[in-house]
Amino acid sequence: MSEKYSDFLAFLTAMQGKRLLHIGHKHADCDALGSAYAMSRLLPGDLGFAFGLKVSAQSLAKWLEIEWLDNPDPVDYEYTILYDTVTADILGVPVPECYAIFDHHESGGHRFSTIQNELADEAEWGWVKPVDSTCSLLIDLFQKHAIPIDQKMGVALAAGIVTDTIRLRQAHSGALYRLSIALQAADRHVEDIWSILEPRDIRSARRPAILESLRNIREVNQNGWSILVSEIDSQDNGFVIMDTLIQFGGDMAMIGFPKEDQSMVITACTAEMVEKAGVDLGGFMKALAKQVGASSAWGTRAGGRIIAPMPLTNLIGECVETIHKALVN
Image (tube, helix red, strand yellow):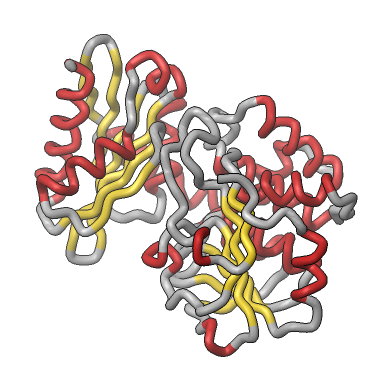
């Protein structure tokens, strides 16, 4: 699917003067926040997200000096615009009767994506385009229609691209081109964006957790591929630690931690492993979910996660075994 409705200017006209809610997926990341914020500069309204923001998105919101609503109710608004949202479950609040959607999840977009958007067909207005991030989709629209990107919009859009490409590790030429547009508008370098998302105090606070994860690390080798596995106490630093393990030299990182009364495992791997070993972490996690009665499973080829009502050690063992069998085959 490409753009559901190509007349973006007609959409902007139709939304003028409405009481709007801009909302991204629950536990919003920088792509959800950045795209929602950028569009809200064109169409003023409230920003809201279910179950809060991830740490990097909190830093971005602080730098942008914006206020956002926790668990907003679309019923309180004339119209709702969804960002970076694929399913009703990921939205985290009731799906409104009428809504617009901007999202980059569509199978075949870039080499890591196997996800289909399940909300697009019911959208009154929709732009679902298989690119690296929803922020990139908006940059394409803004460029096509000669809509200026101001400095704060540039920072927000750049942050979405940087984080959704895993610090540019999964960025292709299109992502880098769009990032250059955002950085030029922001009058910033990419290092400035990283500093906004991870200020010094946050980096310092994370250091003990990262060091502890490295102390507990174990390596699983399969067919020459290095899988680095670690358990941590909470989700707070999970994605940062996973990224650190990849930088540490792993072909794949696997991090497990308690998730309320369940267990959660997140995984990520390098582009080389996707392309040469045929890895599909999202597919692996979804297949495993059926075997262990998982609450949910999600992912792309290069990253996956699973939540299940079982001991953490057992869930990690199942994940390792799943990947082991896939690499052997």
